[in-house]
Length: 142
Ligand code: DQA
Image 1 (spheres, helix red, strand yellow):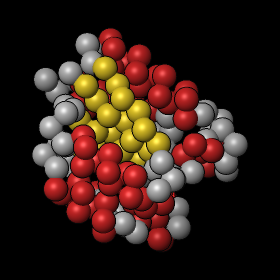
Image 2 (spheres, protein in one colour; image 1 turned 90 degrees about the vertical axis):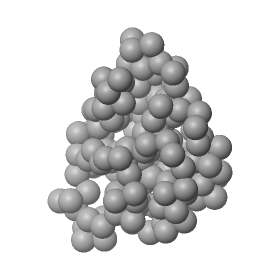
Image 3 (spheres, protein in one colour; image 1 turned 180 degrees about the vertical axis):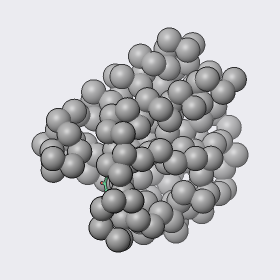
Image 4 (cartoon, helix red, strand yellow; image 1 turned 120 degrees about the horizontal axis):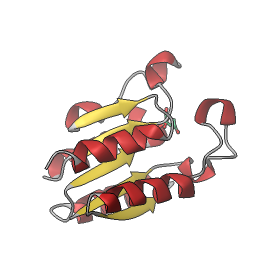
């Protein structure tokens, strides 16, 4: 029983970057909180963050069949990456797309996701809680 938490580019800068948009919490805070939640439900959590599209693709490919679900904040690659979409399509493991901010009330270019229609679901706009809600969608599912 394992979940994978994947984070894309610039998520390593949370807590320093655009705090009025993304809040004061850090990537470590997210990883700790989701790991605790997973543990309460008898799951282990693996975490990976990368600023490189290809590394995220590699991690998705390697994850196939190894997890009950993948919680993925693809950050700016959400809006651009057909390659990440194809990777999500290529694996059996369900992926939930997560965003900290409500991308639908921001710039027009953030309102389109290349990935959402390849995902099991999408959760946006709840800050750190977006990750918890995604985790619960997997954890309370079974
Ligand atoms: C984000 C939203 C993206 O548009 C942006 O590029 C990010 C963070 C979010 O979590 O709100 O880096 O994915």
